[in-house]
Image (tube, rainbow, N blue to C red; front, side, top):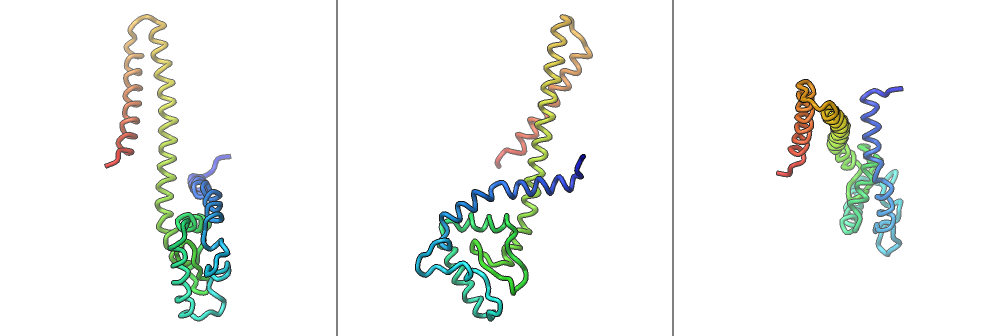
Length: 183
């Protein structure tokens, strides 16, 4: 059974997203200010807007929550785990704060980063395809050169294929170096 490119891309994207999530969650659990029971640190439910909480009160409280996040040693990991878990909403009645961002800001950041994640997944696919092609070409080059030495004669056809294969290897390697060169 083969999957369509879209399904394969979603699966790859999801594996990229899920890959670091357990480590992120462990780091947040171990080091987040909001996970502590220290005085002045809001309780777990305080990070979410109350069902009938007035907008002005929530805005004031949200700023105070963001200030706690700003002082947290693991706010980056918290934000990244929230993005990976799909946290956030554009609905005002479902507002919350995580990783120093409100719910709608998490949605906006995740949307912006989905393009970056897709580009990273595409780069990974391209790299894997190139690696498979390089392996195939190296095997072919080995076969061509070992066959030429067995015959003991210069074979124009084998020499031409050997040169073409070596040129293809060099072109792929040059392209890779050019892409990874830091400006």
